[in-house]
Image (cartoon, rainbow, N blue to C red):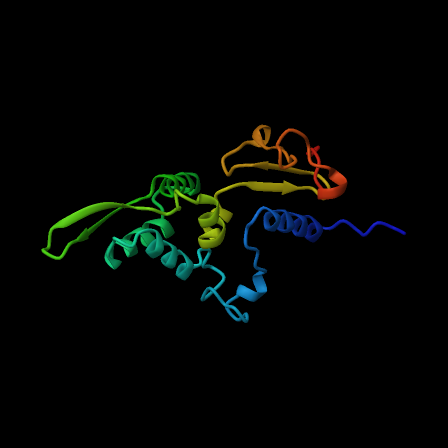
Length: 185
């Protein structure tokens, strides 16, 4: 029996299975597409699932008024920075430190607060279930040349993109099982 041809979709499916195996919620694009049965965005240009982010901000910051939550949403979906790298770093800081927001209280006094973006009591749950679209662009980039793969961050040069490793991080992942091994390019 011949091995099934290894394609880009084979590597993508392996990656999605791995993410699902460690607890991430996986949804296939056509279901969430603007014209899909479970549409979550108005068009393909929307990277962040707006309602999911708004819901997570409200759940994590019940003491903040809607005005402050909308300020946090705006800052998260339009991070400051002159270029892609600066915006990526700014978004990372907002995710880690929270979002500084201002709002007027009932007597008109301007107040400041730090809106939480991640649940400090259960950060993997929030990241995976509530705002996965934010992490898709900020966590890791994987470059694959068929059966070889390397992982790095947005700003990593070629020398810093490291071989895909097993979950323990101590050994290279089994290339026969994951489709990944140290890249030669």
